Amino acid sequence: MTEKAVVERERIRERLISVLDIAPELMSIFLADSPIHVKRTKARSFLSRLLTDTFEDNPKIPSLEWILTRDAIGVLRRIFSARSERLAGFSLVEYLNDILIGAGGVEKPRQGFFAELEHLLRGVMGKTGVYADRIPAFVRYEGKRAARLRSEDLSRMARRAREFMNRYPSGLDENAVARRRRNRARILDFMGGTVADWNSWKWHTRHIIRDAETLASLIDLSTEEKEAVRLARENRIAFGVTPYYLSLMDRRIGGGRDSAVRAQVIPTLHFVEKMREHRDCEESSMDFMLERDTSPIEGITRRYPMIAILKPFMTCPQICVYCQRNWEIEDVHSFRAALPREKLEKALRWLEETPEISEVLVTGGDPFLLSDGKLEKILSRLAGMDHVERIRLGTRTPVTLPQRVTDSLVEMVSRYHRPGRREVLVVTHFEHPYEITGDAVRAVQKFRRKGIEVCNQLVYTFFNSRKFEASALRHKLRLAGVTPYYTFNTKGKEETDDYRVPIARLMQEQKEEARLLPGSVRTDEIVFNVPGLGKNYLRALQHHDIIAVLPNGRRVYEFHPWEKKLALADTYVYEDVSIHDYLRRLHKSGENISHYKTIWYYY
Image (tube, rainbow, N blue to C red):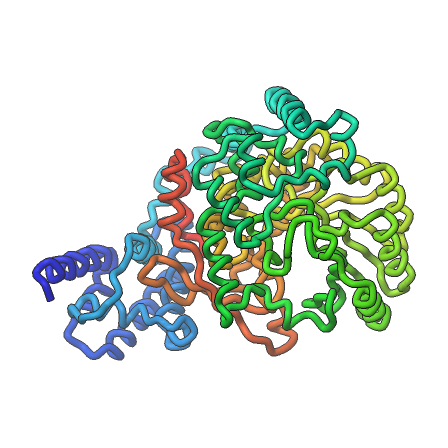
């Protein structure tokens, strides 16, 4: 070993000792000259005693800090268990021991590892400091004085939330409306279109932008953006943008208003490279959600007792980069993406012969790319099944192509909505307030006037995860007539690493930001759609466990199946995004990461 390597190994050892010193007894256990199994036993005994002290109202731990302490102890105990080590394929006990005794061949820990371990031990020892400056004055009083002080405190919370939410422009703002008007004129001039053309959804689908050169002629692109689009087309990775959605992007780069809009459709180089690798690797499966294991017949997916998914058209007007079914999508708005007539008939017949199904989600792809006539044939068949009480239509056209929501389409869909007998509702996908435009609001209101509810499924990505950014979206959606329904954790596919956010951030957002909004606004549920299993409700701690912290700083979770108390089913092990790396990326984008300091204590 070189002298440089020896120095580096000793530096890492000293850094680890300084972190372990937060819990002196634990540090002594790991520094002792004892077999590894003895250290593991003593460490677990130490945590058990500490947990008992915590529940016995240990006066050494400040009020409320005991909750963080209890949770942190539980996490570390699980990480130290043999079962967790087997599932994660990694032993934190052995890793710490190897570093401390100077064992060779040890993977170098990243900064994220030390950050995770430090915050976990601070939680264990009741030293988070979360409540150091958060003791409100009203707790010292009763009656009217307490109420007035409490009201003042609540007003400060509300003002702070508003200050954050006002950072994120809406597509309904006057300046945004003016920019989009100029964008529309420029796009129409380039494509030789008229205002009448702009109002025709079929004109938009005929003029989908599919290549880097055309895109760069209409908006400024960074070198990486242009290269990523070029490589995507070269490697037959689905890419496309409708003229309408392109008009939502600012022409110039750098304003920061349209980053979430651009991120929807313009892939990163990492995404393109990983997609290409997966396609070239025969052993790699791009079916992340394991739909092959939950599809009893082509065109149908079923993960729950009373709900099934029908997929008649496997493409969209444009493709979201992080789409869970990107592996199935050949091209944007490709007529070959329609489920063949005979297979669609078999899928519908399967639904007819499965009376346990009371709700059908018609999605894909986007079924609103079908003609009114073809979509009506599907709705008519579903409505003719007595056991189908609810039909959900999954479409992003109110966001990407609101011109598709014509009076005739809405009139046709509304014929199958029978209050008290059968419900039809629309589920769409707004990602950011900047996507909410007058056209989008009018499309939503057409359905609302017919009594059809419109719900939103938000995918929580890096590009809409800043403080109160999702809250700003929920607030604007409700004003537009859209009900927040789900907030999804971005699928943990390797190609979407640029989009993924730590699970702890979703929980922090729900409990510290969304929680400040009125109940009628914060109606969505945060979920991780677990491959092969279905939705896992992240808000509920009993649905998942942290079982490891890896040298790269990533947490490893074990997710429990939804039916765990009804039937035996396997759990799912998932490696999350590093909190440290996420915060560092936020900092580079201009965020004050002190606003996110409690993220470490969400498990």
